[in-house]
Image (cartoon, rainbow, N blue to C red; front, side):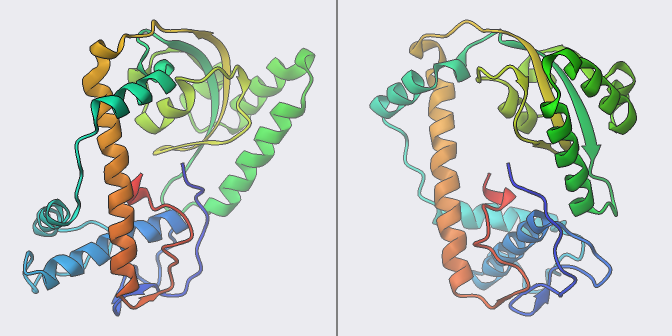
Length: 263
């Protein structure tokens, strides 16, 4: 997951088309997201897939016509081969925990919510300070430190219960949150902030109940889908790099990190 850092007030644009208004405060990830979307929108127009009358977005939300045209553009330009049986078997063998069923984790967290107008840099600083604080307490006082921090700082209703979320399965969580919790062996306060669509989380895994590993034949479809997605991400990233090399880009660095568009 990507680090949400604030960007400067310098106007960012793609081929002269502004990506935001002067009053917008966007994270670096949000700005890269908009830049990639605008780059693809303009390419769709150039390829005759979208009317030149389609207006650029001022809030990052594309028109339905632009979204459809971009889907067609990517279908035409991204070559996504089917993964081989051998590749699928190798992936399954190396990642069996991911395809286990019934895994549960007992979790508590402290949520620093990202809301409209929040200073993301300051929010991240508070979250990192809290993470360091709860990790630095010895075992005797760790429970009290985490619960106190959750009650005083968390933007989640669970804060009143010391951050307790209880026993969870992957389907209980947002996908990006589940990715950080399941298929791992870590127990205790995770040494990193967990990013989700809701904000930044300080997370402690209290207990784990391992799932049952599934044979390859039972999860062949899921394995193939995972490898196709990985190939798609690589192809999309390369295509965006190609388009960026032919565009005039100001105020945003598309090479600074992987954009959320290709995660």
